[in-house]
Amino acid sequence: MYVPQQVLTNDDLAQRVETSDEWIRTRTGIARRRIAGPGETSSTMAIAAARAALQVADADPREIDLIIVGTTTPDYLFPSTACLVQNALGANRAGAFDLSAGCSGFVYALIMGHQAIASGEHRLVLVIGVDTLSRVVDWQDRNTCVLFGDGAGAVLLRASEGPAGVLATLLGADGSGGGLLIIPAGGSALPASEETVAKRLHAIQMNGQEVFRFATHIVEQATEQVVKKAGLKLEDIALIIPHQANLRIIQTAAKRLKLPLERFVINLEEYGNTSAASVPIALCEAIRDGRLAPGQNIVLLGFGAGLTWAAALLKWSVPAKAVVPGYRNLWRRWLYLWARWRSRGRQFLRHLNVRLIRLFTRNHRD
Ligand code: ACO
Image (tube, rainbow, N blue to C red; front, top):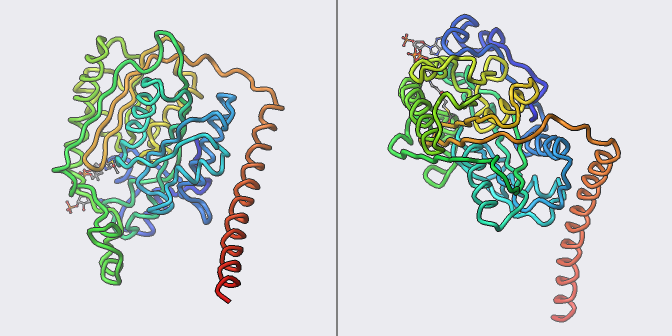
């Protein structure tokens, strides 16, 4: 996982808009969030998270078959953020694409990665959830700007035999709710213009109450459905890692599912809603805190803009962290350095090629 250094507290926000620490804490459970600094983007955070995942798994980036980045705040409309990650890692064999499913992006991407492995086509898939919502938030709109933060989380999926891994998955969408959480301008429907900028149409617009209603319902429903699909019961689930949108959403869902709140991973006090990054960041922290043990069943659950939702039930099989020899990390660092030079070399050769062709055609014409 990766989160920016810069912390924005509720008190900081209260100096920008008419709000208070007390209001934000009681209505959302959020105390602070991380905000990307100058030079930080979705790709830089995704690359940092991916490198951390490769280090933990002691994996070679050149063995990655596929990179899927769940994000709604890519660096550019194109090239995809996944391609920027592929280039920086030197993952020369990998296919790469972005997946847009709002805050469900990571769980959607994880399920696609799982399917790619299950098809027998791929063996090592890098799945990243990243968002830099601070760049698309209206900092004058207190209804939304208090909710979001920036960050990235990554996992590596590896083909393996055995009873562990992804046991059941669920994908859902209800496009009729698209307008409830939307950035109206910047796409083909409403390209950027002076008017769209003046009207702040490039920033998040949200019907908070409707999204809240949808979220509480879907956390309960999707959890029940995915558990049933796996042939298990709610009691068999050790941990639920839901999208970190609002503490009250998680509390309401826990109550309806008749599960203790301790069964949920909750870290939104620290990071706010980091959109597609929230589930993998919470997963990383659960691992760090020793809340996951091999053999346990866990549910990852995303919901968000679209409207979309996704759930994956996993039997955890990753053993406690083994110590990776220092030379392996040095080797990976060298590979990243080599990837940078290789990329620059390719750019230079392309440039040279174009120049030579121009020179040749000019001489030919003369
Ligand atoms: N500070 C102080 N007052 C505020 C603030 C604020 N930051 N924001 C809203 N208010 C005011 C409102 O203006 C309203 O005032 P009014 O009664 O005078 O009109 C009052 O507080 C109550 O507003 P509500 O919207 O009813 O507040 P609610 O309790 O519903 O909480 C919230 C609002 C936190 C946004 C809640 O609806 C929510 O969490 N919704 C879900 C949002 C969400 O999770 N979005 C992300 C989805 S995932 C994705 O894909 C990005």
